[in-house]
Image 1 (cartoon, helix red, strand yellow):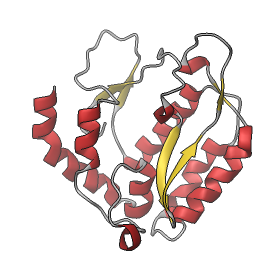
Image 2 (image 1 turned 90 degrees about the vertical axis):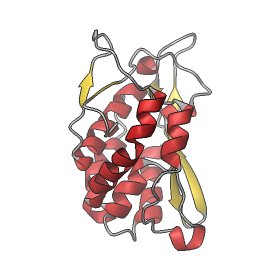
Image 3 (image 1 turned 30 degrees about the vertical axis):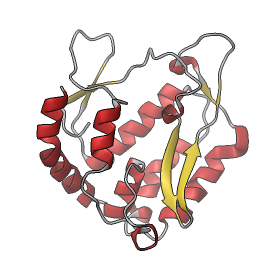
Image 4 (image 1 turned 135 degrees about the horizontal axis):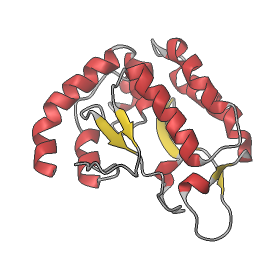
Length: 191
């Protein structure tokens, strides 16, 4: 997203139980990869992600901050950024879409991404779609950065953007600039 001036979120996407990426992310803790999930409870029948509510099952809003602290508490920038993330764990009654949009706004603010979010109803067209496996694969293998668990596990690609933020802090913006510069030729060929 950092390579574009505008982005659109598909707020009319249909709920798909198999699409775990909508409410799950991966971090690295002291045992390796850890997948964190925000549980959902949806009404019966066909529905949209924007109608699918976040559930309090498993008290995820209490365990997830602890998991983040265990995984990233020793990184140079955890204490600097975790307070900005904490409003995501207030367990308000909201849809998965609303939680994702709040998380995205926090991350874009931290990374100073001047990406304008366009309504899905806009007439504008877009060249790239989230979830495109070829694009995702290219970005997951690009430009290793310093990770707190690197000595134990080597560089682990494909982690949540939180890994980049907690490990690199303000340098995450520079990393994204370098990544964008390296990936521009690849993006043009995929469009």
